[in-house]
Length: 340
Ligand code: ZN
Image: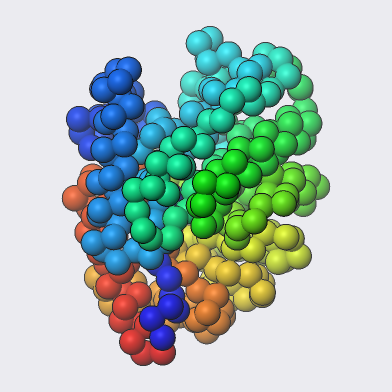
């Protein structure tokens, strides 16, 4: 049954050292103008090559064309000042210099649609395109205009929907919204977060995924995880809400996390992208490590709805480690596939 357990990744991959300095978030571009445009596309080609050689079935562009998964999108919108940045606390965990919303936000032109078209043309594999979710966008900027997280989230949701529809029209197979903020602001998720996400996904012709996680493998996130106790039950509040939502796929962190796997059962009816690769360590999983996570998850989600995945983006890792982890993901999925 080779079509079961289709592998995919959460989104980002490290960039080549000639494009951006490795090992940092918000790394600056090392090329300019036409050379930068060409360099980004070459980096996408390499990201595709690495995924396809590893046996990843649903590939992404590795987010090679953006400096950051949220701010690059925000900076392309009207109503945002990204020259006079402000420092804010992100996900209640770490400070970052972020763009400032100074007026009504609007999308005057496509943001990633050209990149999506290139991705579609550069591979014969199934493709996924990632966008930030409305709540995570709100949590990654300073709002000097709306003065309401909810109002700003709705404005972003409408903009994201326009962008997602245009991306889907290029032939991309899955659109994913990244909402790590869902794991932090539980009351807001319930009150308006899921509704705003559904607005962003409205009318899309392809499956829509939401990625929730405990963050990149950076120190602030690793320290935060140490405060969460022996069992991480954060998903317990969100999953029943997501199960009732119109979002069809949920991507979550399972490898080396203290998430009790039975919580996946709360997502009944959804496709589950099971994170079987830890992005917070340079230790490369064996195929057997990956297989063990998948075998455990399969007790709570039917094989036809299980997609082996990474815990989160791999952009902070070295390319060598990321490539080896991709290979482990592909090999681990093949092991379990053979058992089905
Ligand atoms: Zn993540």
